[in-house]
Image (cartoon, rainbow, N blue to C red; front, side):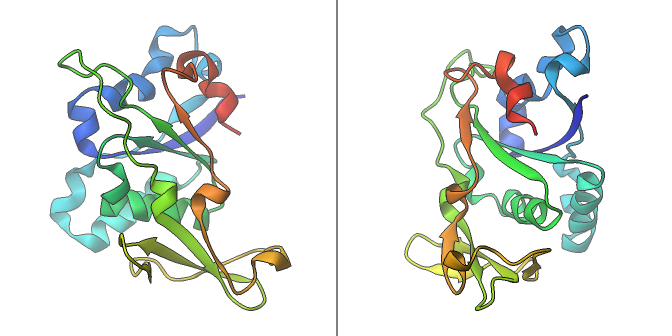
Length: 192
């Protein structure tokens, strides 16, 4: 059965067409079952309404989804709302993965150098009993508390090995490449 997937991306990658290739690959398949998902992403136009409105839109967009897919272009790792979408996806307990999209030809029919993995720049710091995870982000020189989202209360304590420590999200979340990992045929296997 097809799952609902929330797509997180930098809007420039929509303009350049790369994000659309992944989000719309189901269109040429017999049905959405074959693609493995229903698209539940939102657009950045709400930015004009302010931070509270954008958070509400993202939170609403994540409702009834079970997966969050981060489409990684050149600047995705530094986009403030992509960071929020990733941490909020953790908060709502979505299965999270990322897909490099710079190997897809853009509108200019060129590919780009692979963008940095946002999971390397974001992390979680666990409290002393493993029941609370505080989102953290790397500034390039230090890890800082991510201030747009409160600490996440975990349903069950994290494994004791993680207590009182901070870890990059790349420890848990996988990243694929749309071209070299054959996303057209394998995307449904990446969705849980």
